[in-house]
Image (cartoon, rainbow, N blue to C red; front, side, top):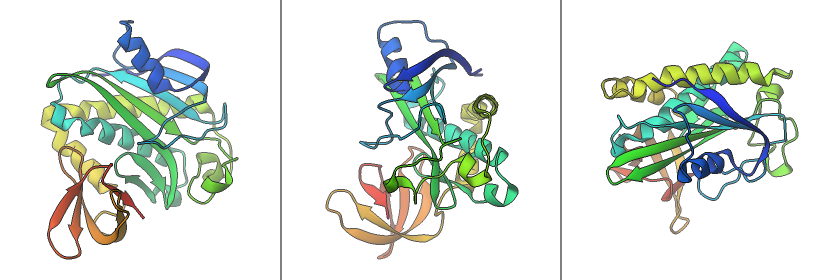
Length: 254
């Protein structure tokens, strides 16, 4: 069980994930489900070296602490899955049906509407040997954003741009926190298969040929995305035959 609740609300932070991790590292009491929310994030991170753009006060940027000691280290990708599904459910809730039908989860943890990104998730874990000490789930959801930089206008979108109106941030947040609580139950070891099935039902490019690029040397190749394995590695069926798995540091979508 996890009951997400806003524990700290900041006008401005460099990063909500960094703030939660800093509190954990100095021994502060951070409750299971505690949410650190900020109106403006000055150094928000995406995956790898990517940054997260957001106009102050227009979107949802927050991080939630969790203590999933019931999960084996090799199954921590379940946290990415549950949070991606929670965000996708939320996006669908506030969009017209025809747009909701185009919501997809892009591995490892972005949420797309059609071919445009509307949300990103960054999960960080603290490990002690072979056990999980803590996890921090960071979420950035474009809600009322209408002023994307030129380099993002074609690839990013928001609820407001898609629906043609602004939304009450608290209403969107409350619904998203409810979905996080419900989906967290699926991290019970006996329900992980159901969680995995739900994730794959909405996975971007599943069973579709596409172009990819090797990070190491920039080589492009064609493959068919067959899903992810239990550890969260991407499974690609190669054009020359056979299946290979890749981590985020090894391959990128084109």
